Amino acid sequence: MSAVTALAKGPTDIEGLLGAEADSLLSYVCKGIPKEGLHLPGPDFVDRVVALSDRSPSVMRSLQQIFDQGRLARTGYLSILPVDQGIEHSAGASFAKNPAMFDPENIVKLALEGGCNAVASTLGVLGACARKYAHKIPFLLKFNHNEFLTYPNKYDQIFFASVKQAKDMGAVAVGATIYFGSAESSRQIVEVSKAFEIAHEMGMATVLWCYLRNSAFKKDKDYHLAADLTGQANHLGVTLEADIIKQKLPENNGGFTILNTKDNPYGKTDKRVYTELTTDHPIDLTRYQVANCYMGRAGLINSGGASGEHDFADAVRTAVINKRAGGTGLISGRKAFQRPMAEGVKLLNAIQDVYLDKRVTVA
Image 1 (tube, rainbow, N blue to C red):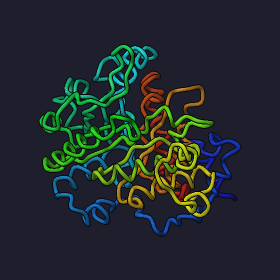
Image 2 (image 1 turned 90 degrees about the horizontal axis):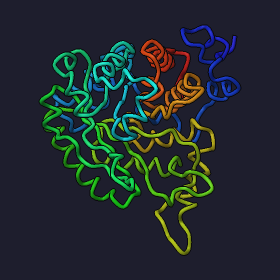
Image 3 (image 1 turned 135 degrees about the horizontal axis):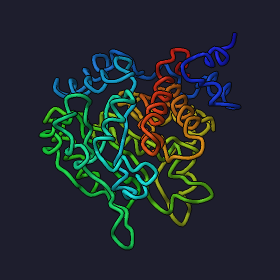
């Protein structure tokens, strides 16, 4: 019996959801950056990897709290529910499909019932129900956002909360976004670096949304999703001592080479990134993202993306790619909260089943 056939008998039909890509995704072996060089997730990740760093015992405890929660407890993998879209995309655009999510308590309930390791949201959402839930599931407070009401719309991450407010409500981690490649990125880097330093001093873990944003990155393809550019964003993120990196799944490569022209020189790269370290296989492209997270010393969690017609298949596919690349998990929001509670729980559980299935191995 093949490994692919065996997977079909688990709690979630992983092979069935992967469809025609099943054999390619489940059997692929990375050769450019072998798994033997990675610091892989595992039950002892905090002791084996984080304990070697300058993180304090308080930060280690906060990270361990996250790793010890939910269905993936003590596996070294993470399933996080993020709901900051009420600001980032507007509340109407985010919650009209499922109006119950206008109530912050239902967001936290979904994370709890869905077996997540943590719930990531805004000061207002988490603060509204902190006394009831902060001791029941780890809170990850995202302190900066891009608001979508200024006319014309602009794209800039600004502070909505302080690190102290996160600590006071019982959060064990803080999160932030930096729009790398944007005109505002230098200011954001300085702001977030200072905030992460304070968070670590207060004993909290740090999570960085390492997103690219620049209209020039859209050419023949959307190079916001290029492995080389997102990989470099990850490398900048771990330089700021982010404990966990959130990144979009790569869909292409060669952003540096496309953007670097005679008239407009841009960045630096090496041809071996494209000829030796990566191929066009999605697991190879994601492995390059992991490599830029200090070879896995900081966990890579990929985002679940927008909700669509094939949410379950898309979520499982992303989880398989992330896990097999050496990543640490998924942070999936809209696919889960834009549907009734029971269906949202089922989707989150499908993602978690990938990480619980020992037959889905690191490539």
